[in-house]
Length: 390
Image (cartoon, rainbow, N blue to C red):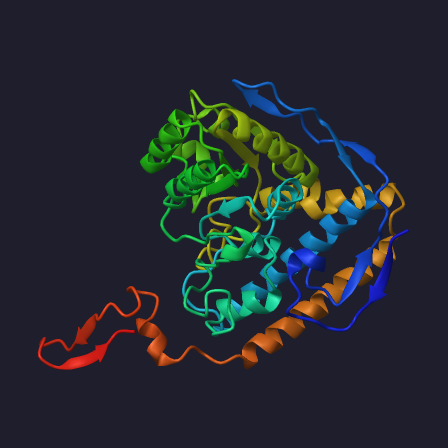
């Protein structure tokens, strides 16, 4: 039976270990539960997997914990941006949490993930901490990229997370390169290269897919179709919005990206396929609640009724919550109490991140050129030597 337990605060504990939380909704019950996905999978040049997904009480509760924390983290980031504590670009993931947690449930940290700029929750799912997240968002040196990357450039190489990329679609060829390295090393792992529907028309995506198919690379291209590329609806930007079919010669699968168990089933299926047969495309039918970025109110190109309708009918957290309650794994009060504790934990992490120091000014010159390369920095007149870069 699920229960709320209290533990001492530890903001540095990895998310994957126990959601970086000080208090948990936990159970050790691994009794199998079979659940049918909300919608059937649709395949392109491949027989889709079964709708029946095996899960456990432990996994369902972990899904709820993980997504509740992700949701609260992104809502807090919204407030920090409006308070001007986060600067530059900032793209929030609330609404799409099921893609991250479902994918992580199907793979290991030896598998690689690379994504675009909507990357905070992917980082958290890979084992990042709240402190690293908020410190990076606020440009502090304790951030995951030492405060120099900001919202769009999260990174955690030791857990197979390679970013965080600001150039639309550019992460896909890099992801296929990671898959090439995996095949070359014969390590039986795969790479998930994630991109949005807005990036699905990029030429480099098709070039990378062609090479991956020629060489049978273990590359899984994941299109997170939230139906709007910035403020442009998919039907206005793509003649063929069936993105899972875009691979032509490469098989594809359309997945309900608001259903964490469906995502888990699809990613498990895709990993097995990619290791044996090469690349596959997964189209995750999902939705973002916020605008494209913080400069976008998200309400000029879609109605408020549309957004509220998705929240009521397809919200990924509410779906898991209903499963938990229907299987008597926790009470409504326990779930609400946990959400309150998540709010406290996020607030504690923010307070801690605010205390972190900014990077030293000398950091402007690091991580640009090879160390000890002897690169010199001159003034505008090319006569005054300003610095020798480290």
